Every structure is written in structure tokens, then in C-alpha cells.
Length: 331
Image 1 (cartoon, one colour):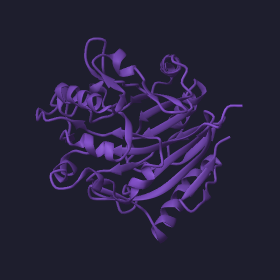
Image 2 (cartoon, helix red, strand yellow):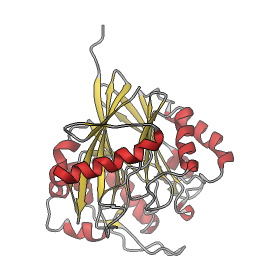
Image 3 (cartoon, helix red, strand yellow):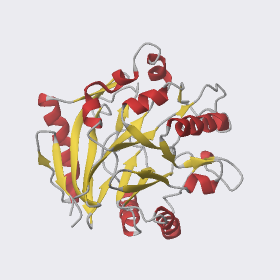
Image 4 (cartoon, helix red, strand yellow):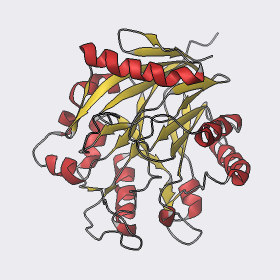
């Protein structure tokens, strides 16, 4: 009989390394940005994140359509990602072309040279749709990324950009998800992930539209739905032995904090896998501060955890409290 194959996948939300975070890289070591979360991030065999910026030295900003914020990080951001055990990132979001096509080209080149996997943007639509493959010791992973944000960033057959999907048009879901899942499964990975930057900001509960889209992603063949975009975490749930993380919130940035919605509260999401089967979700509460993130402790950890329990309740999911934070069995 084969020995048990045990793997842990880590998920976090938006990692924005530009603007003031980028300036901090001149004086802080890469490890310092992760504060007390670093040991927890290393519990995972690999961590998946949404890279909410370009990594580039180019200063030519996107001006083709109106845009208020432009997030671009210096090349040293690569060392920050590596220090956080982030081995695969989504590029399908509303900031990846903030520094125009050169910014995206630089980002892809720097990630490739560092051995950090990525999906969701590329030189053509076909490249943007292509999944990344992560080959761990005991498990193989496919990682597909898409967004419904910033349609002007959409890749085409001739032009580079992001894998854009108009999620509001339900009529296209079948074709889009069937093709994406087939491509994700082409190399017969043990786990197929769909990472999706979907929906409006600062919304604590996914609308029925986005719940249905996550369900459709699972039903079409993905094992894990990794959501992000709202800047605040939303509830987690299971579906037929698979996992839906509706929104994993923010994780590292320089953003202003909403005192009610608390975009400075989030989690490290750890998915335990045995023999290529999803077994459990561990959620470790974290507190973001300026260009830094730490494990939440004491009463704050209890408060953040209770907020997640409340957000899971409409899905008939009741996370159990643990020494780490929260636990959900996947079956």
C-alpha cells in the first residue's frame, strides 16, 4: 500500500507591493513585511496569492481609460514574495496593466526568472487563459486565473492582457468554464484551482450571482475556488467535497482602513490534502498594518474569527474554533 501523501496549500488574498509598500523596500528586509505570519506561511508547501500590482521599473502609466490608482512595485518585490513562501500568483486583476504593456511584460519576466508560477495574464488571450502548473512532492496542481474587473485590460488574440470574463452574462458561463476546466485538467493534476478576481469592493457577502458562479466553477471540474477583489474576507463553504473561498480579502498593502468593514482583518487559509483529497481548511486570523501583516492574537483574534463564523453561517457552515483560529472539515 502506498504511503499517505500529505500536502498543505496556502491561500491569501490581495498582495499589493507598490506605492508606499514599494518605498519601504528600500529600508526593510523582505522577510520583515510578513511579520509574525512568516512561520504560518511556511506551513504550506506553496502559497497562492493575487498579485495586485505590476512589478516593473517602467513609469509609463495606463492612460487609455480613466484610472485613479496605479500600483507598480520595484523588482525587489520578487524577494518579498519569495520570503512569504508565495510560489504562485494570479495576474488577472484590475492593476496588472497599471504600467502599460511594458509593466506586464516586466512582471512576467521577473516572476519567470524567480521561478514563481503565475496565471491570468499573458501576451495573447490564449496565454492569459493558460493555467500554471505547480508540481509538489506528492501533489500536482493546476492554477487558472480570471477576472471580471477592468474590461479594458482584457487580452485578445493579438494583444497582451488579462483573462477577462463578463461574469454578469450567465449565458457564457458554460462555455468559459468548460474550456477552462478542460485545459486545467489536461495534464491530469491532482488538484485544479480557479483563482478569480470578481465583484465589487467592500462587500462582506457574495451576491447570488457570484455564489452561483463559484458553484458552476466547482461543478465544471475545479476543486478549489480562490476568490479575491472585495478587500474584505467573505464566508467559506464546501460543495461536494470541494472548497469555495468566496473572497480571501487583503493581505499586504498600504490601504486606508475602513473602521467598520475592517479591510485590515483577514486570514491565512491552509488547505490540508491527503492522498490528493481535500480534507480540511484551517483559517488563521491576521491583522494588517502599514506594509506589514501579523498573526492576530487574544481578543482581536476572537473577534476576527467570530466575524468569519458569522459570514459562513448563511452557507450552513460552522467553523470550529482551534488553537490556530478556525477549522472546517471538507467532505
